[in-house]
Image (cartoon, rainbow, N blue to C red; front, top):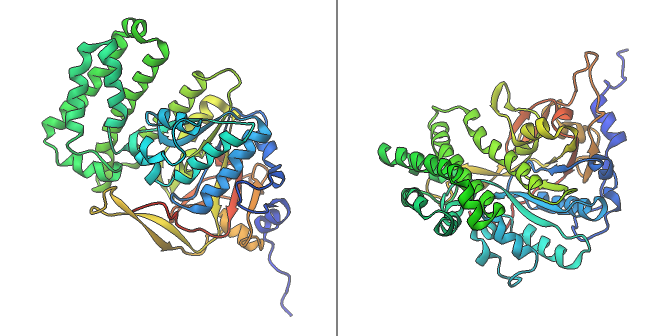
Length: 430
């Protein structure tokens, strides 16, 4: 008679023992079930909380709970978001109580329309009602790499006072940028490609010269407006220069001629922004960082055997070491709201519900389903997850949008939070 003993399932068995079931996704509810996060955050200067796809309601709610726990139970003082570095200064003032509660769109159209509206309104309420307020900080290129004006326009106001002779360089960059920018990098890249090559080169040259001009005139600029204003202006020009590079890199990728590694210019900017905020904040500042899993992971992003880029998290772990921790957020549903390229959309893509294949063996999602935890909200510390006899982690995959990222999961993420359902954020207009 054949052996009827079930085959061993080390990952499923391990998750069954080590996963903590969470009570809900209510961002205003009790936080005691999140206490395992305390060990993850202990000693960290930055804890990054991810998402497996953009524009998912449940991911936003889960991250609100985690950020609130980090603020109220662990003493974190800054919330940094995958949002424009330049644009975030006005949003910080709004989340601290400036202006009207219903005035988010007046402060930032992108914030109101790009899926972060509920999160930012929650933060304004948290700062008003909680004894643990959070400053808001942006990390990203303007409008996800789709525009120059949000970064450069405030620099114009600064240069009129600090260095008027540099204004023609800025005005050249704005004039060319306004001819094609808008929406997102996905929309701006093909529009950039339709520019005359002479204009493409003129844009790059103007931004490069402006960066060098700011360095050369640093003493007089600082004397006119102070070190902080100068540092912010430099960072804004750097955002524009990185965005300009991204136009070409994105277009090359869209037309099958580029390399995914070229998009790493955005990851460098994100990581440098985190370090910038740490350096420009009070001693003891701790940052709760909210961005896509593929930005926060510590290991290179790979889809199958194809290298994509060293993400922000890979750069941060090189400089912060163990002071940088990561919590991936994923799901066990059979579909996902996916970003699909669409040249007729003002942002270059539309969000469509997309069916998913069953999770692959070795993935976080397959292990949770095998453990009977696919219909629950769970939090799991991954740092001691199972390995094979050669010491290689058995967990080596996690969902990313409708694709699969292959990497040693315990090296990429310290913990994972999983939800059983995903629904499209109803506030997103595209």
